[in-house]
Image (cartoon, rainbow, N blue to C red):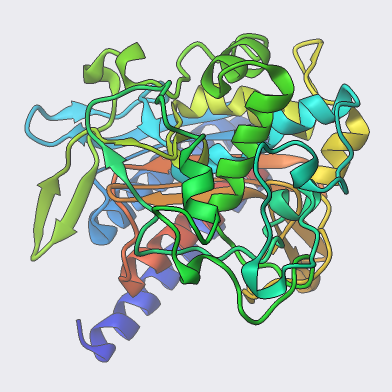
Length: 406
């Protein structure tokens, strides 16, 4: 697409979003006898805009919800999760949620922190059955806080990291151990020098690296004595009433799971329902309604429906930027949570996104008024500027809609 077309589309979308904003604001300022009609109009208009954005962004389907006052106040599904069967998305459609899974993994580990089984600044070697150090800075201690905040000096190695598994649910006999040992140590079969930073000491710099959360999941198994996926079922999903949530694809009716699509050469390519070896890092499947239960727990200082999952102080620490700053310009990191400060809005946003082949997901909380949005898409963002712009606009429009909901 030429630059002129991109600019033209940008202006068009900007005008549409401004029109939507005006229409929705009018619905809240109308006289009492016209509020219902205006509200219906703005809701229909919002749906048309979202449908339009999904079309130009080449996203076959989206499921989404809005949370206010620790309650799901709105949810909806758009588009088709199966193009051949023309099956519509709903708010109960199951999606693979990619890196949002890290917030589950971090929560699991910090539940054990609440039981005083470790301290955040403990050396991970106090608990692992093998010794882990950055070979380039072998005297540096790597702590659990560094693992959860991506400041361990581990890199994200794209060449050897993503191993897809098309048949097997966890448990996997050689993951996380001995796979982790073989990946992290110079003597290991899967070791690569690209896995470790040559520029930064541990604790010195934030560099997003998936492998940190493989380690976090292994620490959950070591400290709890339970398999990671079983621990999450018992201590997170069950008490949070997340009945549509699992790391195991076999737990689902496959017809309820959104098909992942890749858009290339003006065609949607259907991908298989893959599974990840590194399932604690990005392999969770759930619905927006189920994930909202988890998100509400975090927004409500560790409590969902009267059940405490985490201590309030622990939740606050997770959603606090951890030193040092990070390599990216658009967000910082807490403990298993992305954090974005927006000084012009005098606000802070906390959440997490996720991307895998055939999926883009996001959950985000505006801290000033405890408003949250969640959306799942069954196609990835790739490197398209249009797709990137569309998802950012959808995100902004969901917060705009949230502002109009009572």
